[in-house]
Length: 130
Image (cartoon, rainbow, N blue to C red; front, side, top):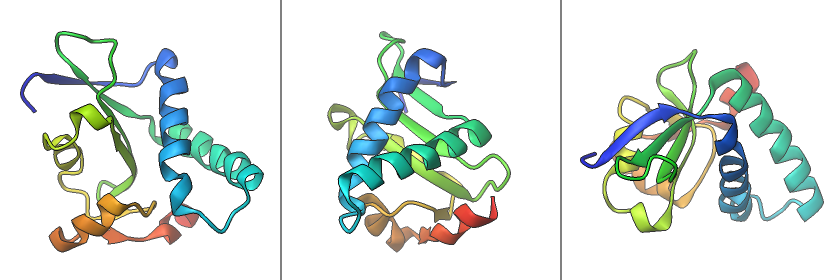
């Protein structure tokens, strides 16, 4: 991940993290009404962020820019909850590096479908056992 650094999220990062998570995951829950999705997914995110925090990746030359972020389970090292990479930073292996050692995810996305070939497993029930 040359040219990038990592840090834990800061309060000023939360608006971007929540907005990008809510918007990018919306298509994965098409059966939910808009109101239900945003209200209930926000509650889920609140709990996951409170328990696990978020790891932020930023360009070294622009530390206030969030290139990517990951909510990774702190109690279970093999579990990732969600990873988001901004469009202009995709294809550089950032998500792959953030997910090193992770074999399960609690949120289904197209990227997870691709990663199943490398052994990633979709296991939403892990949200119930946190």
